[in-house]
Figure 1 (cartoon, each protein chain N blue to C red):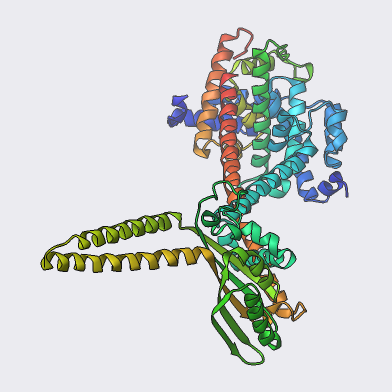
Figure 2: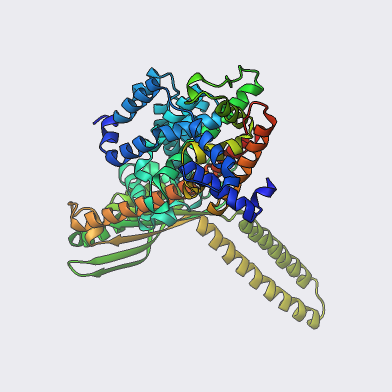
Length: 176
Length: 406
């Protein structure tokens, strides 16, 4: 039995359901955090690969599968940030931070301003906004993924949105 | 971000609820409409995966991420901690496990070997672990040596001192081979244990006496006891030291040799001391005799006569002592014990009790080896666990730092 076949027969239905429900959400979170589409694709694939490999060890009693999956993706994303930092320190080519054409579903000025302001936020704020508004995780799932206490997640979301609004108010193109 | 932990004010709570409502597409109060709109805008600007990438990922998940997935998509293969460690050290991923296993095995062998070798010198190590098993091994070694090469074995046992012929080396001036053996008085003693079938006990005993006689030895004490099934005999012999080596070799071959031990004691110093004191005592006797012949009064003759009596007693005592020491060098006491019963070795077969004994020894040695292996493996395992915990903590901290630095 080859490795792939073994994996396919090990909890495949549940994992495939988790994958179908989370693929786009996970990508959105990773892309929002990393601000680079190519890196986001790599990390998204890596996260699902790790999750499939560790699927036998997932314990539903310890939390939701989405929180667990996003925790894996978070670790992979932060590893990517670490790698990027090392490469930047070594004068490697910095990653392309320009907005990708496909990232905006509606190319309106307002949403583009929101997107631009979001990219200027610190990574920690960007992460919490991505988890909340891009991926649609509830506070419990965000807590499971990040290790923040559930009661503190709302506070963190509000702080990030407050800073985002401050950036938007500095942007003359923003309609608010 | 110390302020992140500050509880939200009621107004902030309202804003947060408005964000949640806007995200869910629910209506909000008019004064919070921009919060709801911002939530909707954020949701609308969420990045979407490229269709080609999504299709590739769908296929990879369906196939369970086959090995070619990483190669085809130019993604680095997923590696665990030990694989990353192996690659940094320079081993291939597949070579790491065999190399680690080999090194661990080598470590166990080296340590266990060290204990076994030190066992031979200090009597510790597996002796304590193996108990009877090691004792039996020692006996077995003696048997093999004794039966196969009695004389050679004797020389090996005597390697720390002069051979038997040198027992009276100081007196005879012989033994130029062994450095430092000249002019030394060495007293030796030998203990031999033989095994014979019960029916051969008497014949063996007779043969021991014959051998003793043939070497001009003396049977100091003999004892033969026991019935047909189980008996025992013991002999205390005195063999002239010059012939002791040959005598012991022949005695060892009378029956199956079970064990043989030898002790050597250098008595040169007490012998020399006894000789000097005897010479002094004799000179004192001569002096008193001279003094007695010149004495004039009765009182002087009686006084000198008493001194002469005690001086002659002293000479007699010292002479006896010196003769005892010289006899101790000239003759070697040999103690021979003859045992009968199940372990005589000539009963031939390897029976169920032998098998049980061997199994017990094997289990004892195996347990000893297992204890040694555990003694090595447990500290290594603990170190690995500590290293993994440190690595994990460092990784977590490094990731959070990367998030803060971005």
